[in-house]
Length: 302
Image 1 (cartoon, rainbow, N blue to C red):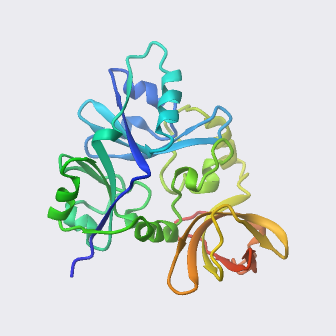
Image 2: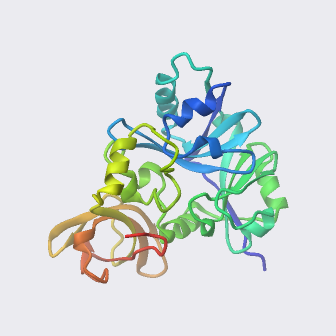
């Protein structure tokens, strides 16, 4: 039986960036190399404050002579407003395309094969009147699709995908250690490299300057990363996102995304102080009355 699942991500929205200056305009603002984005390549990027703190993350795809930004739905107006602040005299348009499009996550062992996609992060193809791309962070996360709202469900079913839930996808994403916008990163406080953006291909170190680049580079080259967003297993009463994580009664970090698992076990992402974890990540951590066990992702380089 085929293992290919799809879920419409209602918490994600879409902005369309057009105009002759769109490449140069975004290149000076976002963390990844906009020049790499094409009809067959999608990247994951962040927009930071001038002080290098997280504001927005998005997947940046190309369609014709426009860019499509798969971003947080509830915060897309803020992203559009901030982009327009930097437009000045540039020939750039910023439009909300969420009313006519949906974002879908496509996952499972057969997902990429169903789409005819290779296992290369960011690889992009036309699909269902829109496009589909391998998740630029990790191929194991499957693919994402940007589709016209009318006909999206039919296109997914015709391609052999069965309907899943956000919780199904979150279990995969959280176990892999991949953040999801402000669900996992605190706006105007989080630092990219604490949240895996380097290893997950969200920063290009050779592209030149971008907003917040100075702090981001200093964090990397001076080894200033003291905390990391890590997958955790939770045993006991399910704590809420935002709950404090402690070690011996002292603060060790905070839970971000949380999703119920099987039985009495749940999964989560937690921003944890590295010095609180122990040499083998076996330090006794707690979130309320629940036991928390951290795990270092196999892609992480620390």
